[in-house]
Structure formats: structure tokens, C-alpha cells
Image (cartoon, rainbow, N blue to C red; front, side, top):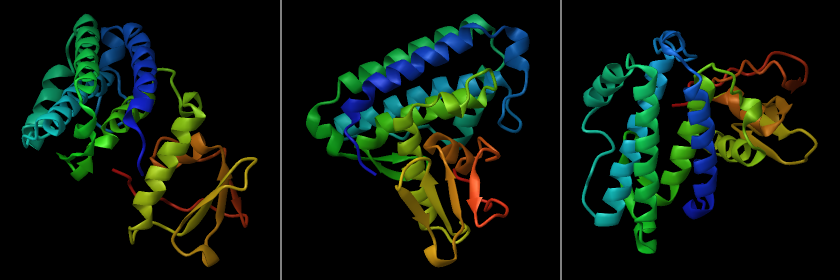
Length: 238
């Protein structure tokens, strides 16, 4: 999947504004409450989003300078930073989110055109720099849902739903643990295939709902299956 990163900057700005609006409504009790992610409070999710922005700044800097800069110093450091940040008071979370988002925007603005052709090293392997803005947008939109604070997959834009769905199905296509399935969009002939089409059930619904189900953010109750039966069980995404 490739896309022009500069076309997504406005989407990142809008997603950041929505996240900050939600975060501004959360008090200390809200932040200590569980998120949709097992073992994480809402404070953990917000701390992760701030450190994730800085991680993407590291990758953008790596692409711009040619230096080998990891997204995080280590997996242990990433976990420690999230744990340390989770119990902070609301105003500190909000300030951190704003400042880290500003740093990300500045790092994107500093990228010369040739730097987008670089390859950087993420936590899960090499990635083209052209996908870094998309990666940040994906984190913002999915983890905003994970806050369990009123933002839902149905609030995702149609474009985001399509991009997410294409990314997930592409990833599943190369995995032995992914069941065969045909994903069809409501009111459209467009479909995506995972595995053996001949034996695959057809799962139909809006792109955002399909993407939410495949990423574990929805049980898929609004989706339909043909022939009638249970939804396939997708594997853990990332």
C-alpha cells in the first residue's frame, strides 16, 4: 500500500483535534478507568499516543538525515515510558499530547521531498517513509476508539475505513492463520479477498465496520455473512 503522505497531513491534524477534544473532557477518574485494551487504562492509551508521536518523529528524522534512529530506544523503554506516563493528572496528559503532536507536525514539515523515498526501521521491521504519516493517522484513529470515551469506528471517515481495510487484508493475505473470506462493501461491487476465494464466505458491511471487526475493535454484529453462518475468526492483527 502506497500513498502520498502530504495528502494525509490534514487528516492527521483533524484526528489530533478530535483526540484532544476527547482528552480535554477526561478527569482523573476517567483516566484511571479501563480502556478497550486489556491491562491498559485510558491514561495508558494517551501516554502511548504521545510517545508514539515522538517515535514517528524519530523515524522522520532518520529518513531526513540518513541516520539509523530507532522508533523507540527499546521495547522495554517504550513500556516504561507508557507506565510512567499513565497516572499523570489530566492537564499533563493534555499538554503532552499537544506538544508531541506539534513535534510530529514540525518533523513532517521539515522533510525534503527526496527523504520520503527512504526506508526506516519500525518496531515491526522496515517501512517506507511514505507510510509514516498514514501510520500516525492509523494510531490516532484506532486508539481514539480504544479510549472507550464516545468515539467509535462509525466516526471514522470512509477514506480511512478503506485504507485501513486494504492494509489489514494485505497483511492477512500472507498469513497461514487467517481464514479465507471475501469482504464486500455495502452498496458496491468492490471486494477484497483473503485466502481461497472458492471456499470463502462473503462478509458484507461498511468499510469502517469491516476494518473495525478485522482489527478487533468490533464484534462484527452489524455485518452479514453469506452463506448464513458465523463470522470467520480473524487472527490478531498487530
